[in-house]
Length: 220
Image (cartoon, rainbow, N blue to C red; front, side):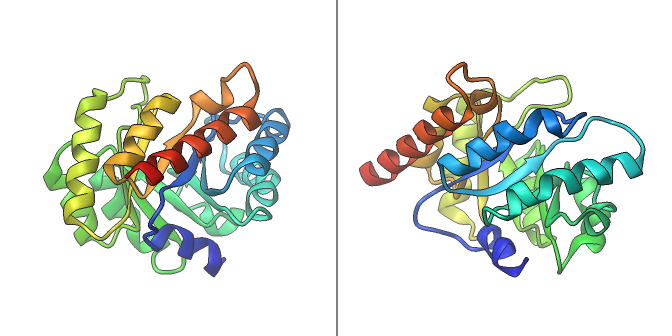
């Protein structure tokens, strides 16, 4: 697990991909698409979003998908559920908001990754950094699917990259946004629906995204 944790904790000269799954109710329905995406590009981490159910079923869903992710050397993070990580074999969790992060930190650190998103203000982002977050995320949708304006996300990523050492993840709704976030200095670029919802298939979509990130880095 140490090698996967280090992928999130270490800053890199080129941005890496952070893949966000659709909400998972049935692992078999995602496994092929997830394997295809991970086989087509270098992915640092996968954020597994789980449809609500009882804890035992959640753990079984994680265990069904974990080998697909971890055998590719990527870190498997749960969207919430910091209490289930150890039992399910996940590498950590992503927490929504500074209050949730502060509450969950002791359950995760130092053995597992603890990331923080839904940071509404710069002050909240700095609080997450001071509380030893492994990364901060800017721009992800909320529970109703609403996102901040992309200009605001781009501004936040640019500010963070210029000032702070803790890695930041910029959430991209499109491949074009991914390229702009890479150019702005994001350490990781999160992609979700634009990969899994692409009519060409997730392998083609994520390979194109990786190519565009490389071009953005070369241009920078």
